Image 1 (cartoon, rainbow, N blue to C red):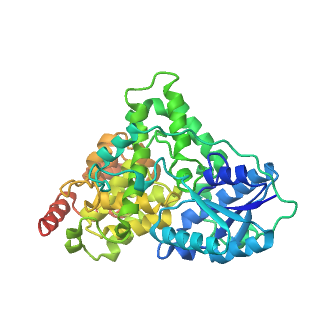
Image 2: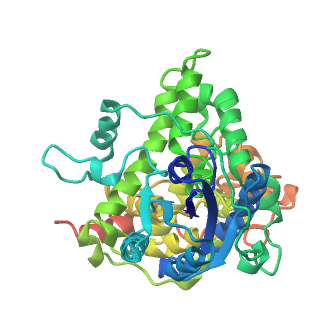
Image 3: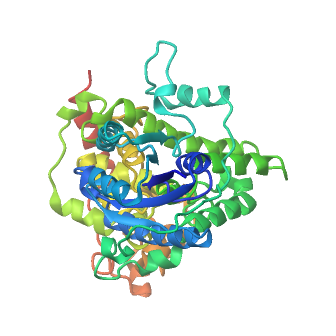
Length: 475
């Protein structure tokens, strides 16, 4: 006759939810609860785009639970106080949850687990977000990994279990009170998110449909199309994984089943699963090196001569740098709350190397504008781009946005889509409008500097300045 609370956080799904599955197997009544306590994340409060997604995801989960004759109970934090209140109201003798790996949330959860056990309540946590726990993967010298390839190689040495089914949920005759979803105030007052709403389908069902369509239509050509931002060649599962609407084990199983079907392009499955591997590696690094959310892993970069340039940062944020591929990426980010991975590397390289603006400024902007803003992946990605993190790009590697566009957007379709003022230019000039002959510009009615900004920096000269800066901290 026992009752258990299942404390949902970034695991907003019913399939392959270990905490929910374990609670349902051991208790008669299950009460799912979500507690809104953003302040417990410290300086890394969820950004606006992420909050929009969370609202939609909670709504979708609430509907799904309704189909199972259950409810999602919404409360405000502090989390421990909210859990204790629910325990008093329901008589629950146990609380189950799935683990998070953000440094402050690890400490919060440890404190809550100890406090609940002191209260005589059974408190139990599980892994639902990763294929392997960060502390279970180590080098032969029992150290954490700092390089991806040997880290990922260890995953081939273990068997990845299959996902858990949706458990049968027995629900109480009387439910505790719940806030309305609107009471959490996750949505902004101005509805600037319509383009994102048209593009995305948050929720467990949307995640399952996206995984299915990717495996069916795009996995076969993934190695060829993954770097082409103008085609739908990537999985776009990152926001679903971050919010826990799908698990990496579900992705792993879906790819394995696809491999067993029609022939795939050579290394297609391996290339895609490596991206899941980078997500695992990001969490591994964050767990073992929590200081990297604010400080470079390679400490010599604390002495790097970063530039304080608010105008340059603002131009980058708004997609007004005069460098078409960079501007297309930043406008895609603003419009859709997401950015193609190849272009993420380009815009991050441009900010940290051509503009020499501190990587944390870019990190913070991505944090507020990405629907998949993840502390582990965001930190690893920005430190990689700046050359100061784990397995980072060499300091001398500076992405050239023009050559990157020539290679991965050769017809300028991506640029034309997000920088429409350049769409009327001939394809070869869309990535380099400053090379358009004056006569051609007049014929097209294109006015450089008025219709589209002049380049904020000279790419060749700014690259040389970045390398000169790196020379000052070598050794």
